[in-house]
Image 1 (spheres, rainbow, N blue to C red):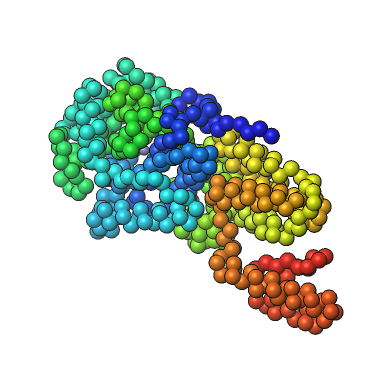
Image 2: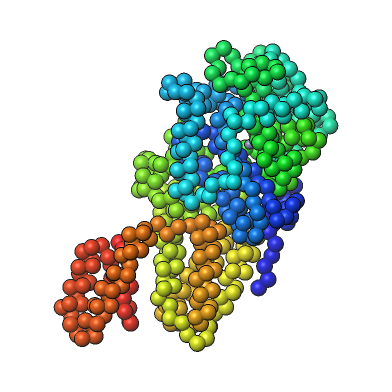
Length: 489
Ligand code: ZN
């Protein structure tokens, strides 16, 4: 079976495109990271896992990937249209902390949750507050190009003027006319010429604590500015992939494109990749809807919508069971199903140990890798990869029962291919196989060998005793024709 080439859906062109990096084998990827003012929640899991899969897969294909994922610790106001308090400053005020204490605490919480989910750390994780100079320089470029205006110490992007030369709205498929009619008027509330203009630099009010000097005023950068400035700094004026959740497409990514185009004269990202959102029992997740679930609540089972705790790998597997562009509806029962599926998959991998090689193979092991590549190359179709692996788990069970045969060489290839796909690319982990279980394993195997000898000598009393003692230790023994399997309950 021949493998295909990687194809990604590009939001910008609205079609699947073959992935051709600009400077192979190097690939530059920028993904919008979290605003660190609250506990990481279910909504953080999907983009993190989606772009982790893309990162892992690109590396598997042999690319040298520079993956930049930012931390937003300044400039993200409560309302995306430049209104309200800074999210981090507000939390700091409520908790009587320094804003950077808030940012640091929740960045650590985010890292812990990502590690638990098996999400690899990016190559660079720049903080917005650490790149104020770069952001001021970027605003100057937009100013010099004539697409910005000053109003009471704040600098705004002139969307109308930009739209005369370029197309504002090309990513989200909007035109300025639609945006005008759909944006509620903010007349009198700020200094903008038009409601759709956005802040590049905001003058800080007296009580605003997060502030830096600039040529225009003591203030802080607009939320969208950090991504234009930091992607350019670390990936250059043009790079391969820009990713994020669909909720960021407008206004955040649209504004990023406008800023970069205004300052540089061209687009910065070649492929725009967006993951769809997670809904909860069919509804959008939101604090006001009472269905807001943090990852810690999920791991501990502490939420009224949960029947029990769910492990980080169950969450990861659940996310991978849907293609990243399709909706994914969360419910406790859906997670229970994911938990069972993951358990079956890990047991299948464990069962590889029980296969006895033959002189010939009745199966074509090389088809596994090719089929997985074909599915993954089709815009990262992880659910199809998982279903292919499940077909092979079925084959593994047939091999254990000697309904199929496999040579020693093919068995080694099968083990290797499954390891690569399940652990390296899908990034799953066998949570039941703790290091203590690893050490326990040969001991239990030894007990079962002694029991096997006892059975051969018809010493039923000893055989039963070993079995019962293991059961009382929480190790369940299942007899087979020529031996026994065991599992920790
Ligand atoms: Zn961004």
